Length: 228
Length: 228
Image (cartoon, one colour):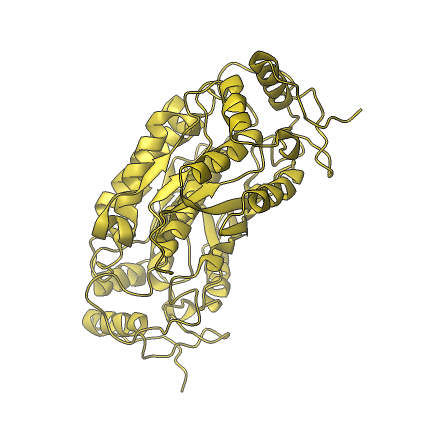
């Protein structure tokens, strides 16, 4: 661990619109940024390339992409090719929900944070557009924060782990406005659930729809690269 | 998901003495058993072979070994070859502590449990011999159980996730007595922090010491296969 006085933060960076905005926000808050991505068998693997480019663009102190065999469990349209990706927002919890995904991601972020001597973890969850996901709600985040301070040596000895969710109450349009002020180039982010290997978006899935609507409501041009 | 009425359980099986006992116990309780192991860059990789053999011996419904790149974070004697494995029990939290390990393992068990329609997760944590590990304490387990019911679709819709810790208050001798009654063959388990590729134990590390003392106190012959 170096002796810098800059506070360190671990940021979950998927390569999507939300986490790109969180990364820009965390950097603007003056943290030394450590970006964490997961290769978990997701369909939209071009996200990982986007995460790498974003980490480079924002000049993070380190970026790790951790291999995670949770795709073997199946049970989600995002990791199981036998389940179709939906084109419309559903009532209740959607089939694109990956069981316990944010719990797993935050747990690994916690492990890295502890090794780095960081107490601040940033995640781009959003309870507005993704209200169907149980692990995007404030109650989940609060429970994880409690757990983090019980689960770790650093938490037990000093306390103070914080899970930051700067986007949790923002609409997609507000997230885009925030990121635009912070110089995020959204053409380098991938939201599409079934983007091709070059990161080109389908323009028809639920995630593309939410994103398109966000740019429209923000009154900004949509820079997303779509499949023709 | 099949329509069996037998209750399903996910059991964290490391291949060590404790988790072997938990697997035998869960089976004896009448659960359909799903064993979960992790290849996370641990030094004692012969554990993984032991986990496979134990799963076969106890005829589990399925056994998965999930790759998990958390060794990349470093920070523990168990995953970082630059940190020496201790030979004596230390005061406080030992260097063999792997940051957030049980949080990560339980999170992944939760994800698989949800896909399987299981509500019961078994883990061989022990607050007696491993009192130094924060993620082996009852307070940690309770916090994780709360989280599990907030984090998942199954938890939110039906509740009822249970994290079972049948060994949490047992001494090593009591664990060995329990397992012996349940026909666990401890010669096929690996506890040593630096076992060789054939699973032969060093006989000198902290984990070997605790295990040896356990057999001694239980008044049972130690079947562990040691390096000469």
